[in-house]
Image 1 (cartoon, rainbow, N blue to C red):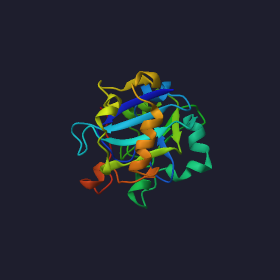
Image 2 (cartoon, helix red, strand yellow):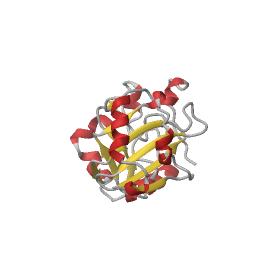
Image 3 (cartoon, rainbow, N blue to C red):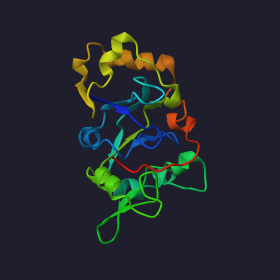
Image 4 (tube, rainbow, N blue to C red):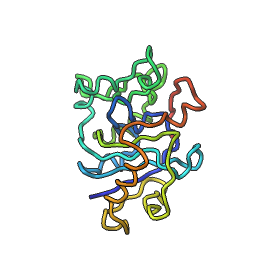
Length: 208
């Protein structure tokens, strides 16, 4: 089993997207999306400039993997398509990529697009890896992020992009960590995205 961990610099509830009982990683982190397999785990921690530095924002098990077209066309994930006449969790929908009939990528109006159309910086970065990671086995804590006990500190990412560990490298049993999580919180979404505390209106991400 593989374990991937990284730091979130902007938690808008877009990547990962924890709403409607399913957590998805459909944009950003192409390195993780290219490698992760069903049964692997992903941990997202707050970056140093967030309100929850080094605290656990999200833990998700990869339960399914789809292409962008499969994700776009699946009725289960219609709720993840951005809708701007509803609440923020709809505005930050991550189901935004699919192919047009001519084979070119379409980027829907979204957090990663421009108001006037496609943001090619984000499109090229996101679609470089045509994989969406899907989880129904997840904890999303957002602004209620948890500080890990010292015994689990090895899970914290030590590099800029992401950490990759095999379960036997942890120095503790993964099942023990899961039991600790279950004692702290039931599975599902148990907090709002950190950025919603200061940005109560929808914003767009220009890209790096």
